[in-house]
Amino acid sequence: KQEVTQIPAALSVPEGENLVLNCSFTDSAIYNLQWFRQDPGKGLTSLLLIQSSQREQTSGRLNASLDKSSGRSTLYIAASQPGDSATYLCAVMEAGKTSYDKVIFGPGTSLSVIP
Amino acid sequence: DAGVTQSPTHLIKTRGQQVTLRCSPKSGHDTVSWYQQALGQGPQFIFQYYEEEERQRGNFPDRFSGHQFPNYSSELNVNALLLGDSALYLCASSLAGGEDEQFFGPGTRLTVL
Image 1: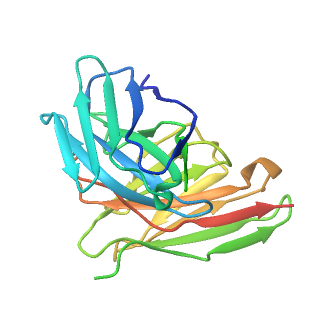
Image 2 (image 1 turned 30 degrees about the vertical axis):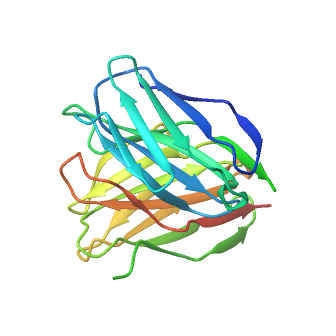
């Protein structure tokens, strides 16, 4: 059974710092891994999608890496800003003929960037 | 191009009642998945609809049922509501195929009193 964990559960950093969020998954049979941002009480905003054949994706100040063999992904945020404060969720899409587009989420990391 | 839309935004019900939530997928998408997100937790997969049939189901009781219409929109129905059903219900749409990105709607906040 696929399980996704995220460390740390919460993180507070001063503005301008670079930071890394971690995601681990137990079954390497995945189609892709996605990082989402969620503001309080709101829906999910997709940040980066990494296909299983890829090693990393970049968008602006965000960089996500994927090591499928070890079951790990990291989200790197450069030069953090107060507007980055949110919960960050990673999710894996399971592969296999009985797992159609099923996405398993981690519990999230709550990030606070202090001005 | 409208993204995924959900209605209503908020809903308050009492225990034992029934509720219907609605989702319209992103234009061009044919697959709809539903998730339940309790406060402080990650979303949990409820089920997925493709070609008007439930294709896969998570660990949720039969009180949770759904439907997909020919225009690919979908409904989530929950019967005999429990206090523990209070959550944010998220709908996601995608293209069938198993490798495409899922796009999420803003969610419906259900409160059961």
